[in-house]
Image (cartoon, rainbow, N blue to C red; front, side):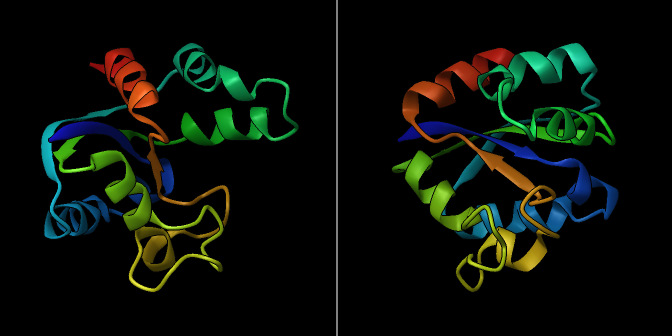
Length: 131
């Protein structure tokens, strides 16, 4: 058993689909062991996404992430990082596999409904950042 980190993003909370996403998470063998709904401020969003600060999409990403509340989560399960990344699907919902969270719910590559840690190391860092 290991842990990973998830964010249900502003487009999903605005459309009131957090319960549907949580059901997919649980139906696919992951357990939600911590969860809270928060409204990110600019400083916290900038700190979390600082790895992208030199990219052209950075300011749009920050504005998007502070636009509505988000749900931050700690998920637990066997091979949690890879299992959850597989479940969420490709960043581009048009390329995401059928049945994945992003195929079902993402609006586009920016408003893609969820974030997932990409490694155990980043999961640990991201969990500590929010919890």
